[in-house]
Length: 332
Ligand code: SAM
Ligand code: SF4
Image (cartoon, rainbow, N blue to C red; front, side, top):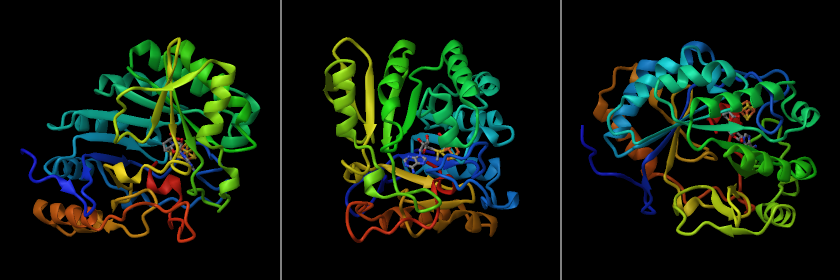
């Protein structure tokens, strides 16, 4: 079906990018996302099944969505994920399909996912140091992530990105080695400023390693960094390149919020629609679908959600309120 009028919010932002969480479960326990113990996962019957996800995507495409990112929780723990990827890759109107993963299960799944039609991967890796990896993720899986990255590269995924969360007084020793590792392997690191989305209210501004500090470290240790010319104004990462090759990106949600260019909307694993990572309110897509709603009713819900989108997250203002769901339950 050709797209109807695009999804525009009251600030004129056009939405064409959907992030779908396929599970809130995870096989590791990063401290800035999940609690160490007593994690509350939603019951399996509350999770959207593949038919529901595919139907939602087809409806979203009819409203102009053309980019999809599959995330979680850890999407690779969702059973039969390659089956879903194959179905999503086949949806007409999707121009770009990507997946964000912690990489632990990539050694086994990189190939079936590629065969299913996936070509773009973001692999979450904060450190090459085994002890710090264990400290951050509360698991000892660094070797699996590195093997997963190597496997993905060997298979031929293009533009593999590494997501590194920038927490102050913790990952400073990792900033430069990660960039070097990525340059050697043809990956691109995207350093993500630590955001207030952890499950234990650990965040405060003093714990954020800011993009400017990382740019300074990389320029000093590796070589001068220059902003990439003609950047995509709607991309969350600000990209820089080294004079002798290789790029790095910074998702500086705290020090340089990019809300004014936001084109993203999110579907949680339990079928709630959110116009922002930090949204307080969400709309119940699953409830509507399971009550027998028509495609038009679901379209109307999506339009209403986007129409009510706020201007931005206000992390830097006294008005900021952390969302009721932590990162793993929203879908990063
Ligand atoms: N499990 C997958 C992973 O770790 O990549 C996908 C879901 S995870 C929630 C998505 C991304 O969120 C991760 O790559 C990580 O970089 C980022 N993330 C998690 N918690 C964060 C936080 N409190 N602040 C900033 N980024 C965070
Ligand atoms: Fe799991 Fe990703 Fe959250 Fe880490 S950031 S606990 S890998 S969902």
